[in-house]
Image (cartoon, rainbow, N blue to C red):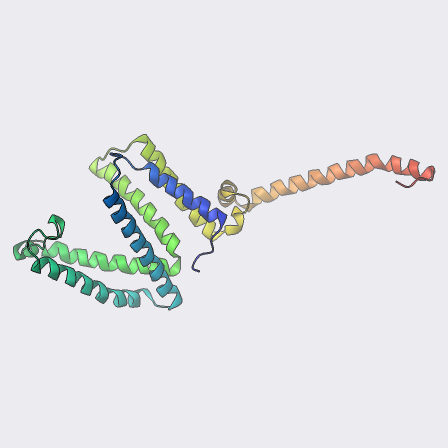
Length: 243
């Protein structure tokens, strides 16, 4: 009930999915376990975004109140995970989830503290964005964020991007722009996505002028047709016939 599904929305989402699929590059080897993990994480992420949108819009919570509500729950979950990683034998949870030593934590303490501040600001900004827009707008902002991250990695780090991936990133940016314009003026997209974007770029004046020209030309055509039919009507009235 948060969004009213329409055909234009499905078209824009399909364009974004097409752009995202074209950016995939690497070994085309299907892994069922990786697919299940990826789909599970995506379902959990979508559920989190939808629930966050419901809480912020339905319960009328502000961004800071929402963060104050969610942070203790996240702390309890992370604390249980850290406790499990410490109590279990080494290597049980895998190399990526091994709890670091106290010396390593002291060494990286300033970075961890700055990371906490960044995470707090990110949570507040996400809550503000979802509260004042919608869950789908937040997802499209995430698509734009990924594109910007790739651009930064290409410019600064020197990552290589293929021509197909460049086209795919352009498609993603175009889908984000189309979604933004669609949300601001849905009526402009009643004749199609390309027409709606053209109306947003050129303004309604160019289309109104075109409609005026068409209406004027249609009126002139009707007038000339009436003038041609007038002698026939006079002749039929003279002969006593009804046309």
